[in-house]
Length: 516
Image 1: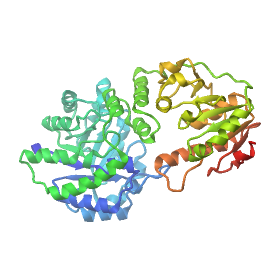
Image 2: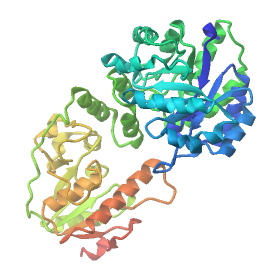
Image 3: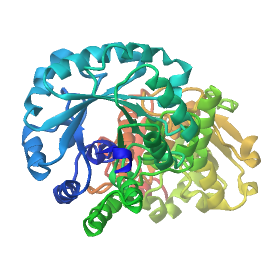
Image 4: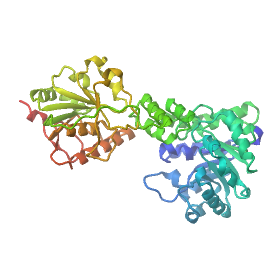
């Protein structure tokens, strides 16, 4: 290996941010066989933790049967687990670590620099149990702003076996790696490690720089699988080392395992993109970007706009006129994007055009083009990338004769409004009927209907979802159901679905009973 540097592969731990720490057994079996055959020194297999809220999978809690199985599959490797310092205290260690003793060599601790002193107390307790101890200290690109925590390294050389510099934001460059390593070396003789992220596609060069500057151990993951933009690709570092004549690799086994993880990658899409590049370059948190990208609600342009607002420390970039509360309409048809909206389109048009006391509110843009010639009063609720979708639907903003309604100010994604519709754009003042997200088209449509003074809301095209849902559909389904349930609690507003729906608790009435 280059300069005798040790390698730690943390695929199962870091990759769990995408799979919620559950992995296919066959994939893990092949992975373990590969690790056993490669010149990998440590294999980090997941977290150990006290019980936390929400579902976190098998490799987050690492029950003893799994520890035993993994050790049998990788007998020559030093198995490693990581603790989240924010969750774990010394008094938890009998529960969390004692069962690991026969199987685990290294315990790493994920540390926010502001909690460094508290982490030292935890490390002392871990070391007393006979484990090697690693400090994974986050936010490396921010250290130069306040390096005072490094002064606490004095005197803990016998406690900490590895001091890892974690480029949490993926924002450092080789010269900064060199500078920070020099700074840390001036404070301690603890062997150093480096954990890179690939936001700016510098995980490899930063890792090679760290090795060149004397780091004793580096991290990687198969295919770079890991939070946000991902990590150094273990296979890339191995191939680079092999090209220098340092190691031999079984490329058949490596190729088979990489192919298995590439299949996962096609589903979860880790790796860098424009938002991750921007967040890395500006040292912004990856967790939020990961959530925005994964929700599939926002276009790249909206995410970049939100990140720029964060960088500039502004809550939003545009304040719109408010949709004034009034008693303009008695009823509102809120049109969703389900198949029944198209199937019953003719009847919906008859309903909204026969009565001037009815308005049509588009919750999304899927069916906008079908109603461009309608003489009814209409509103378009726009969030996320709906402005762009609206243009794609109609091709020419000059065809728009109605108002566009946006969420209340400030909007967490910031605001991108084409100039052509700016003068016809309003925002609801406040979401009053629910505490749920204001980033839902249905939520904005309902609040707009309430603000327009309606006493009856008619849903059309809110079909609901089949029982087999992907994560995106499940999230939207849960969100819509909560909005419906909260609306049912509003006094003096009737809620009816006029097309078939799978949503619960809602009265359904045939649209054909409402027209002649």
